[in-house]
Image 1 (cartoon, rainbow, N blue to C red):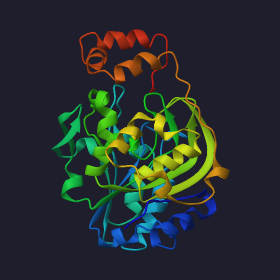
Image 2 (cartoon, rainbow, N blue to C red):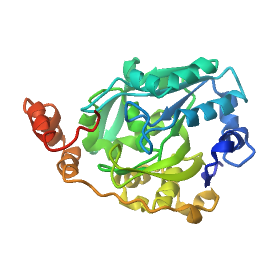
Image 3 (cartoon, rainbow, N blue to C red):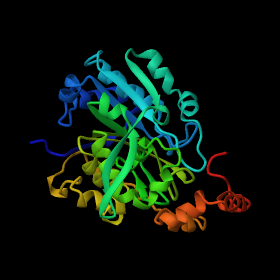
Image 4 (spheres, rainbow, N blue to C red):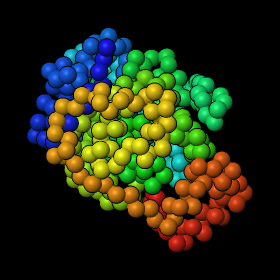
Length: 328
């Protein structure tokens, strides 16, 4: 039986390679080495929700590179994919964004590493459950044809729609549809199922910076220097939420993940590290403009009105007379 384990300590930039290698190589109890040695291909998912590196918003290329190096030191023949999808009303080219942030340099430096824009890859229809019935969703075929398991690398931040975005929420970017926001009204039900179907088993937190007050892009970056890793996305989100001063039970998509059986019992989680000593209180303060967006987030009809109707462009242009665009 595999127990859910969360390893937490302060991040040490001078020995980050050692911190990650200890986990990957099996020196500590969270090891993924056994899975990796059997794998033909794995996938690493950073959080790249902005077209350039932004503290507390995007996963650092340096963090992912150290993870790749640690894996490469174990086995050179396993294919490593690194990728993200593009989406949202203010969508940008993810290929350009990953190039700007230096991710293609990892593929240039290490053999058998490929950086992919998930939006440009072939897709496969899968069936999930939402609103008590079957729901059809397109996901990248890569995960079903090649990937043995996946690793998510989020940053700790609050989110104006979902309250917090950590290991589970990070995989929303794997939906290749550039207008994936049409699925927002069932987000809380879908995200845990998506993570399971795409074989996400491990989480590594790039916690040099977090994002406080508002998110996922417009909040206050704060330096927390957290390094957290786990063999369970559910355990990871529960523990990191605690570290952020947020009760996971107040996060709708985590409650739904618990209902689907993706969260362990808190008493079953083995925590290695002093998370109480590392805590830093995060507080979500929604802006005026967050509230109408929040209402639309939970409504299929209002999402259509705000983003797909003939009035959508005009409504957004009027809004941007009074507020800054999310990406400029």
